Length: 185
Ligand code: AP5
Image (cartoon, rainbow, N blue to C red; front, top):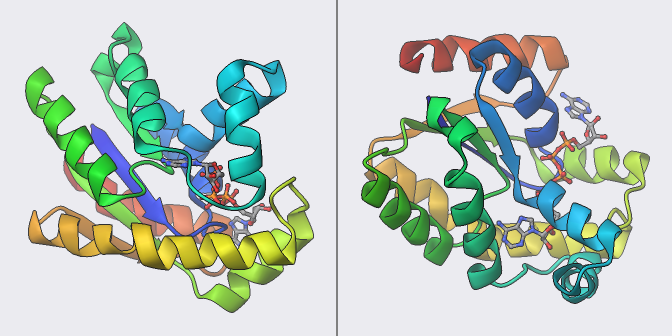
């Protein structure tokens, strides 16, 4: 099963991704986690990415596409994968499609977690990650609207978009997600 998990910052992608990969035994690939690992390790890429992430802007398409290409070439992804926080721009989505076409492994489904901005602000201010300040969250939401939300139409036009309301009990949201994804398992 090859899945994209789409949604605004704080919509619960990471929380639900853990549950999805456990149920379907697929590999979780989060570009945010990969970038934070580079920052923590103090690599040149991490040093470059840190200021961009702290400002709530997007790291360049070339860098994240390179990271994804590297991960998708690993044998464990042959059993399926869940992409969390990627793609985030049309260029990334097109790059991903080209890559998967080359491997003969098209996406099965894109799942959109739908959560309104007020709820997101409350959740992220309560969490306190380095990029969870009010100013950065506002910018992340704006960047999402401008650069990532157009992917909703992109996947809708491919007939691959499914939407789940992401507010309420975490377990109940997982159940709704599984109802959608079981069709593709
Ligand atoms: P990334 O790590 O992807 O962050 P994000 O998209 O901003 O998402 P979050 O991790 O904040 O939220 P989430 O949707 O995963 O929700 P979560 O489950 O954590 O990216 C960080 C940065 O890296 C980007 O800003 C960018 O700079 C860079 N980057 C990453 N990918 C990139 C790419 N492809 N291209 C370019 N740059 C890229 O939940 C959030 C909180 O809410 C948690 O505290 C959780 O416990 C809580 N919560 C979850 N579900 C519920 C619920 N149902 N009810 C109440 N609380 C809940």
